[in-house]
Length: 308
Image (cartoon, rainbow, N blue to C red):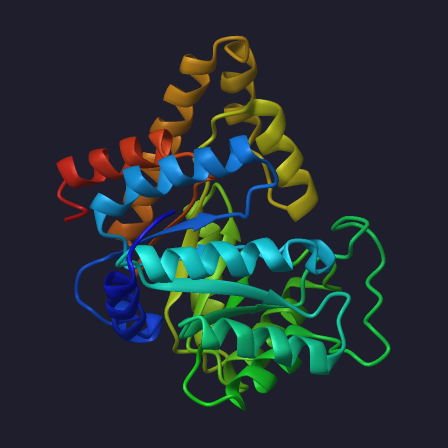
């Protein structure tokens, strides 16, 4: 992704705490990327970042594959972003497939690369989200353990995941909320939710979390639909409810990519506007390493006076 040494030094020094950034009065807009597996994917990621950076997101985050499968690529993308852009970067880190010592080593590598914000996740098993969770014999069992480990590193702002509809493996929604509160008590300073389609689920989650003493910003995650089968698969794996009315609208035009994207942009804009109007601290866009739909949603929010 390029960038010179002078800019790299400035970018590293400019990395700020996400907790501080979200505390600003204006809404937070942020974008998620994943490490590409191919040269074509890397070129698409570069294009997406180039097109989204002018929107001045408060931060961007980079995912970490199941079982740590993208560890090296995650580190490379993170280093490039910190060195060659002015973006504040959040790196994902999981407990999967690694001992506690190995997790600590990766965290140290991230900090050494200039990262000051890490999203602590238990992570999905290598065989997929629905596979049985088996911790490494010398590893961490839960995200709360990773939060505690990261807080022990010193000047690191830690974020965690939130599930407005409940984690698909949780024995109950109440139990999942209790675990979320435990992660915050362990030192998490902000949270990003799994994507969802009903704003009421988000507001109910925030209210129930507050009843448990949680007072950190909870940023709602929004995924503009650009591919019908893909979003249905994601929803099934994540446990998110995919509205029947939306499914019918999308399937009616699924052979027309532009029509699908238009519906996706419309729905994501309406959801984002409802969330911001209800007091959400911002919107976190799951970009799937593409920029067009996200830029269109952002432009519509700007036009509505909901984004700067």
